[in-house]
Amino acid sequence: MGDLNPIRALMAMLGSTAPPALLAAGYPELEVNEQNFPPGSELVELEVRRSTLRGAFVPSDPDSPVVLHLLESMGSVTYGTQHALGYPLLWQLRDRGFASLMVDYRGVGASEGWRTPRHVREDAQAMFAEALRRTGGRSHRIVLRGSSFGTLAVASLLKHGARPRAVTLIAPVRAETVAKNWFFHYYHPFLARAVTAFLRLPIRVDIVRALRRWRGPLLVSAPENDYVLPPREQPLIRDTVRRRGARWVSTPYTHAGHVLANHWLGDDETSFLDACFPGLPDLESRDPAHPAISRRWKLLETRLYAALDRHSHRDPLVVEWMRRIPHAHLASLSQEQLDELLDLRGPAGPIPLRDLILLSSYLAETGTPRAVPALEVMADELGLRTLQQRALLAKAAGLPSAILVPRNELAPGA
Image (cartoon, rainbow, N blue to C red; front, top):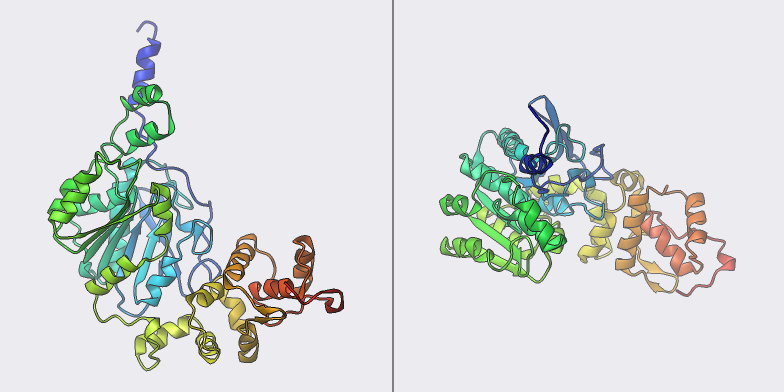
């Protein structure tokens, strides 16, 4: 055969390499429990070509619409709802009467197999089939929600015949340029040109054509200044969306910032979903006579919501704080203890809710035991000396009273 030409070898290697459109993310284990997900959530396992995809199904009411989440590159269901990269919108959607199905692609997080964008089409089809099963085969009860690279997975599903009730796209990208734009943003232009000349398409789909053919309700949100979909390309998708009479929403974030911001359910998406599924009751209606509301209250701990009402707590930050505390711990408290826990008056004035949320998130992520001796040590290590500071730590841990003392050694002030 002769000696192998090194230049040709390099070209062959580059030409056979898929672009960095799907990156490593998440944890190797997925724990679907009440610390990481809303109560009642289920572990989902899907078999695709002798590999197991793993994810979570978050229920709401019986016969709820199902939102199928097609995640971004570096997104993973293993982050749950509390991790810094987690998905709090799983709680928000359930509160509004929507179930969620979120599954990692092959080779991502706890899913088995070889991680490559070439597998995403098959993976997305397996996820859509599971969403269909959960809705009894009724695609009009499914919402496709794609973020960044996940928008190409949505486009692939539409291309191959999926007919959901609605589609939401977050920070859309184009298969033709997503890898090239990524390289030009992070590397010197000379190196970027040398590499991208040999990259294959990450997934064979034209998102513009898919959106032209899709005739159902559509919402697209994107950052104004996006290095993955730069100004010269954005009109290709934006104009297609607007010609369809669909809504395009812009934000001042970067690409990554826009995706992370949409791990929460925003006002635009909330109103879009309400219009697609009118009449679905949500917890904010506070109508305990409604069967769906009654059931959701039970899922979120009915006694807790009763206690919230007694304290006249209407600030959503209070609920966000409570969700950082494992549901099993809250369920172990008596009604009297819950009432005491929700008394947010500290020794030196009201306990600041945003500090409470931050500290609770830290406790949830580090797995600090909710026991007085361990928290006493932690308070000393963090330099929390005053009664107000220790009351904050106790509340963040879900303790019904500020008992981290010795009180006679502490000042009451903040």
